[in-house]
Length: 152
Image (cartoon, rainbow, N blue to C red; front, top):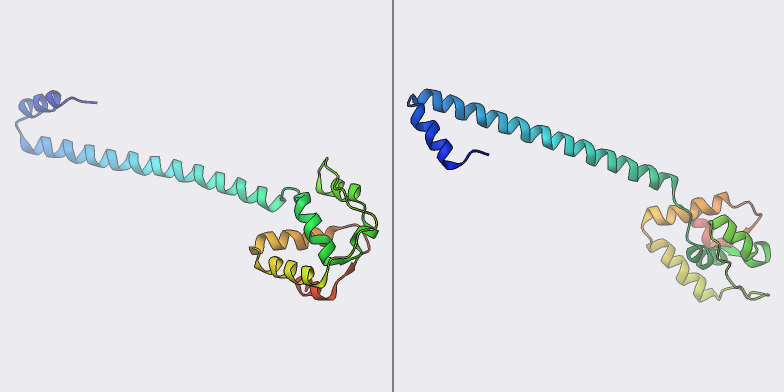
């Protein structure tokens, strides 16, 4: 980077103002071009990162076992009579198997209502992940009537 003395020497050596202004114009143009190129490469990099993140989201990471244990028994009647905790852990890609008492009592109506509200309050992409997960379950399950709203 030129020092202030170098610039002063430049002004002394080139007394013709038009040469100085042409040089400064070219310098400004070159600087603007470099800034644009820098921004273009930075934008391209950001677009690539964005695309990668979107594809990862589209593929979806496995649902958390905690979310599944919380919502599936509320969405389906007698869920734990049809699906073992080990099977659910396998489907969720988890090595941790939830301890579910046997027989497992059905959730109370108030709990079902509250969980339905939580499901409705979820951001759409999270709610859609749970719904899509339910659609892919390889079991014949009996959906609660109050939850069918989400699957229309």
